[in-house]
Length: 307
Image (cartoon, rainbow, N blue to C red):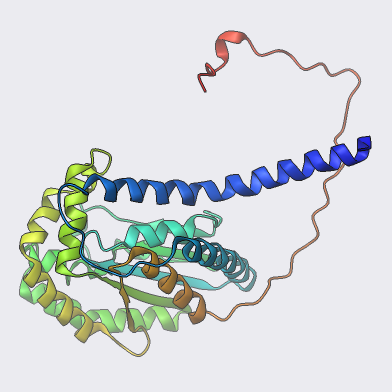
């Protein structure tokens, strides 16, 4: 093998390694989920369900993530404003699909909004006021991990607001969302639906896994007890806020992998996009100055290489 062939072979190996490394984050998350399920092997039976083949899942996920990058570039190029709301019961898988959507996107274009409980001051404001500053500007995609629909769900079920507050919310939401769409915002709303048994299983996983226990708050535990109250609240919410300008889309989410693929596929289909024009990028020759000498870094500043 000639010297030039050796260099090319080395470069191709480096390229393969870089591509494989770019997929490792998703593989790490997958391994983590498999670890969670193995924890409960001796504790309980998992609800019976058909699971998608892992090879198909990864192939389709990477294909969809490539399309998400194309969508992102188109949103930036055309100055679109995209707002996606993710709602569902605790442990329904909202965070998982959001991670897969944002995984390969530019955080300056696609960002996640997950607001904490309102402050005492915010409680005195117009209900939608604290959400407005987070709405997308031109060229942005904003993903709401829970949204103003807290009022129709947790706030209503936990008695954090009055029934009059809820009724006013139901009157206001259609008008508020019509205002958003008239302003040019593309608004998509997804409800992640899981069964009683599946939520029970996922909560048990969190209880028995020290790496995930932080996800299970006292509010989640109480919400588990009030499953039927949440069901009634959800049904009222979907009935009162499913409007032509901003309809609800229900994602069957008992199988997490299927839910992620189906949601991303659907999201992509809602926004017509093409390949955005791009300027060719050419790396310039690096400037080398004869009078420059790189200074060594003191050994005490180095992170110990334990791996």
